[in-house]
Length: 387
Image 1: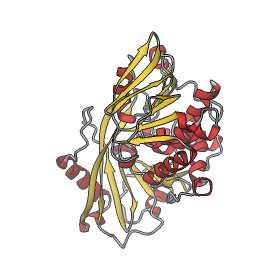
Image 2: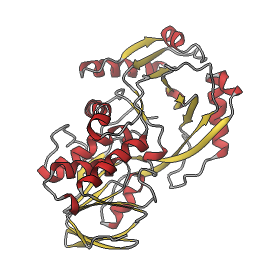
Image 3: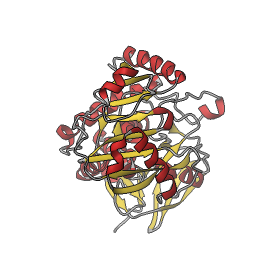
Image 4: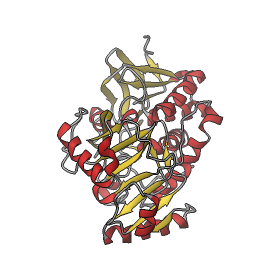
């Protein structure tokens, strides 16, 4: 493994953000692809937060900026095979979000109105319509729901693999199994990245390290309000009763979700008592809590066996929105903090960071309000639709 001594830009993190950024920077051609270096500490690309997510993609968010990011990013996923030659298994099964209290009903009504105004055809459902669409589930307490048929699931590893392969073909130097251990500054400008196998002189760094972005920021003297939170899920053995068109169902009050995975189901739930940290082992006790909640909503689950289980990390910011752009240290950029919905916005985010780095501005979507300064200046935009 021959790490270069110098690079125009070093991208830290080989998940969807870093891979997309590497591809889009190389595609623009303003930086020679050979001078773009992508570093991933895991032995394989996309095995961090990206590879451990549930693979959901959706238009249903509670803020205009997140809906606009989906409007730009999800069509890129639809075109992925045509543009990059990689099948990413985009299944448009639809997301069905279920409200079980009046506060959620009011929020759902507002969200649907906002989404419709932006051209997203989300439907507002009554409790009876929710129950009619989910005959295998017990939703006696459902008051309302929202549904968008174009929401669905995508294979995260295929998206990363497509971007990495395309970037490599253009000449981008990509390295897995290489951990960043330090960053040197010269005055207020980045100068060098130290890794587990050597150092690279560079004038630009893109921090796309997901849950580890805060640690990378600390190396450059940049405080990023990003904390890692464990989230876990499990899959079941085949359940022939579950129809092929079963949607991605979210019991909103419980942060409990179900979607088809192969011939069975993938089921997960947020642990509201989870403490910040980098632990990615499965909490067996909480898995039982999750299983009990799942059986209560879908009694059919009781007859299934667990096929697999795993845990991953969310990268959470105080307002559940990402941080894009500059950081106060010249040449040190960040694209992280997506709070559980980064995978679906990865394609457009890599393109946006290429625009910012090469042109000095975001063009495809105006995400300038999602800068690091907003936390000190009190410009937070709270996202409600986080699971």
